[in-house]
Length: 327
Image 1 (cartoon, rainbow, N blue to C red):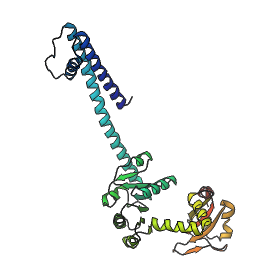
Image 2 (cartoon, one colour; image 1 turned 30 degrees about the vertical axis):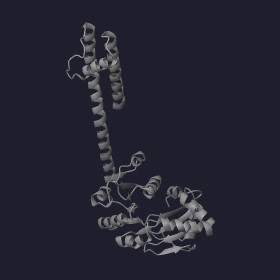
Image 3 (cartoon, helix red, strand yellow; image 1 turned 45 degrees about the vertical axis):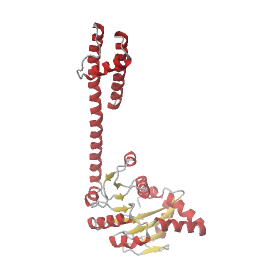
Image 4 (cartoon, helix red, strand yellow; image 1 turned 90 degrees about the vertical axis):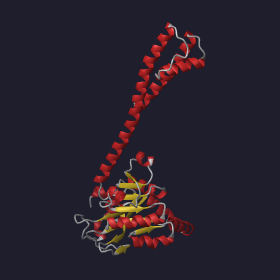
């Protein structure tokens, strides 16, 4: 039984004892309801006031019973209340320590600054793809606890908070705070703490985009521009928008990227000899070379090199098929 349940039972017993004592004085001593309740409360509290009315032998026996039982019940109630308060604080403290320990062990994760509409969606999508992420938010958010998302409560523009989130070990940072000024500041701070980290920042105003880029953002996302472009796309190219929506949502069609490492069997092979279409049912739509050169719509004779990033399109579940093939 939990401390809360025990406390509720103790309080219920105390209330029943109050009612029973009041009824007992009314029956035994023939007193009014108010005087009987007052006498019961004085007896239960053990404050030492004089008797409200003269008690006979039966009344004194009742008073002694109320004192003994009431003192026991009150003591148990206080003990349960302390257990509930202290136990909750200890559980909360243990939870915070476990979370700090998990964050301290992370490497190559993504830090999401802000848990508003965009930040919560980013964290949700990263978690869905089994990618490690740590959310920084000023307010304590129950949704983060219920979704088992690692988080740090604090100001994302504070160096210590970013350090607690593992900024020096993180692979990327997403700045999606409510204020453009805060996003600029957190971008500037993060770039100073981790010069090689990838930073993606949100800009509500188009005039903020160059400021974020100068502060060190690798990419700037403007929801207004993206929304306007999609509206125009629906009006002018609805089938293209439907296709891209399917790809981004992973419905029937999936777009993914695959990095070719030195141990891959694809290194040194032309696309026509890789048999990716036959093996994994995917098509290579672009290749990004290690030196940054991008090849769109590569031909069958295009050779795959070490550290190439392949942009692939295929049926959903493509990533799992590639993983099983271990190409």
